[in-house]
Image 1 (cartoon, rainbow, N blue to C red):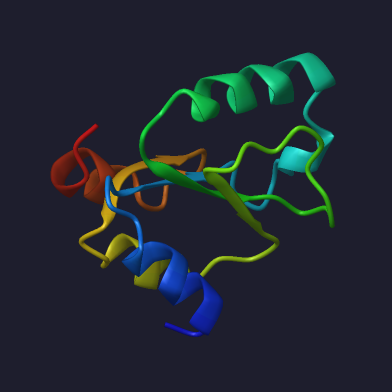
Image 2: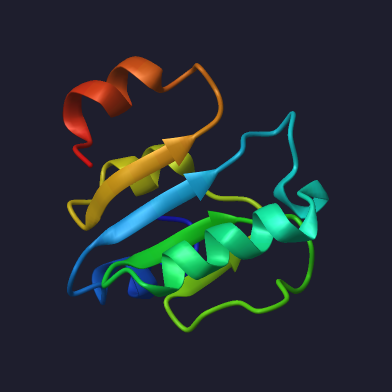
Length: 103
């Protein structure tokens, strides 16, 4: 894994990690506030840690269990056993996600 801090975050996830990305064509930072806040509210209620590909420097209202990165090494994240679920808006990993990443 490229980022030591990201490796530690994934390794320390007692209940697993959910990887959330809207891909590269749709940037999460452009979400309307109400949509962003709905995701944050839902994520805050989960026991899992959430890794969110977020393109801005800050994420308003970020819960303690959410970690943001502007870029994520997706192959490395998907190969971690702590990655228990994936939401990705691209088609590239659709088959892999549906077959090996249960929700």
